[in-house]
Image (cartoon, rainbow, N blue to C red):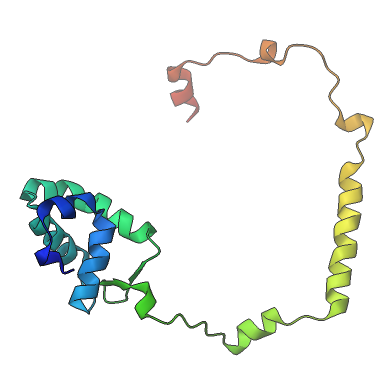
Amino acid sequence: MKLKDMKKEELEVLSYTDLTEMILKENKKPMNTAKIFKKICDLLELSEEDYSSKIGDYYTSLTTDKRFLLLDTAEWDLKDKHKVEIVLDEDDEDELSFDEEEVEDDEEETEEETDESIEITDDEVDLDDSNDLEELSIVSDDEMEDDM
């Protein structure tokens, strides 16, 4: 069913993102945030004040919804209309390739580091039971400014 054929009560039940999906499907081309939200406000008969106060939250909801994709043209479109292509250049491929010796060396280093971090000497343990707060002093704002 087309949006213009729907009753206001039916439209009010839908979320802004659901309405956005329907608008983009009917429009069949990307649209910017302001145009989409203006169309939603027109459908729901919202005021200009509502438009101004809610457009920020609307934008946030679009950015978090996985159905939508923000294009380089600052327009929104449905994600399923676009193919995501991962392009690796030669530098990226070099970083991804490794041989087994490197992995084994890294594992041995990690084991050695872990063993060392477990050892705790008496020098490292603070057994002082005295109250550390006694050593603190209160400094006034004027004294702080003088130090700066």
